[in-house]
Amino acid sequence: MEKANRRSLIITRLYKALTVLIICFLMTRPAYGQDSSATTIQLTSPPFIGRTSGFMGMGFRLNAEEAPKLLPKGIMVKTDQNGLAAGNLEIYRTDQVFGVPVYTIAFFVIEVKSQDDQHPKEGNWIVWGAINNKEALASFKQFYNLPHHYSSDIFLESNSALSKAKVGNTTEGGLELTLEKIDAKPVRAEGLAVILNNSATNKVIKVEIPWLAEGHQTDIVSFKINPGNNDALKVLQHIQPFYTQVSSNVFSYPKSSE
Image (cartoon, rainbow, N blue to C red; front, side, top):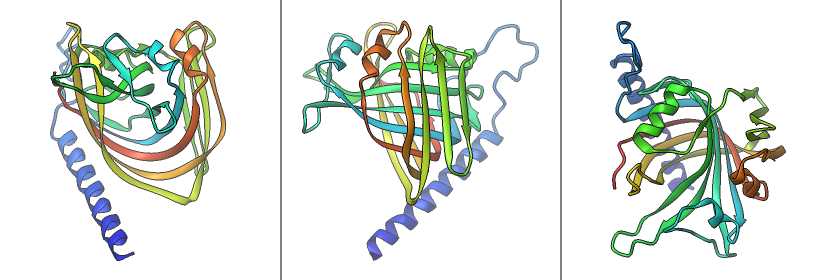
């Protein structure tokens, strides 16, 4: 018990320290697009540092025979002890961010590994994503070549008990999710999310994203994927959720590495 309490205290202090550091960093840097004389968008190089109080996350499993349909050649699905692929859904709206304008985003990732024997890599591959800010989308595509698309149809709403999200429409595809907070199951965690992707020159790049989260586990009130005309969502509509949470997060997207 004492060890658990000590770890909880360390995580709390780390979360507060990183939050303060990020806020101070944001306050001392110029705002995105502040140059009023500019006639074109000036993309700021990473890191992109942000915080959100409206994060919705889901862990899921997917048939390992279906998952490879979402991945390029040379990238293999990692499977769990039951032979299923694992992945995550993230939906959030940034409260404050450096490097790009504030944005709302939703995306699915699948855990993967590369087939490169000399330099094997493991991480998460984004197989579908939507974002509601064109300038932020331009930055994510320029520096990480991520497959997100622009969508004006992204809606998030939350109160003390329920968090709701609706993304996309019947044509482009999307999802609807409602989560109910479980007060008896708090979440305070930290980690390093690893995103793998192909660069514009078809080289595998890696992005290591440190993050801190504080919130609660949730029950799923409702969840529906509307595949529309999207091939990825037609596969993902068969996922099996096993974990969900809502939280306040801080995170940083650094420069990618090959």
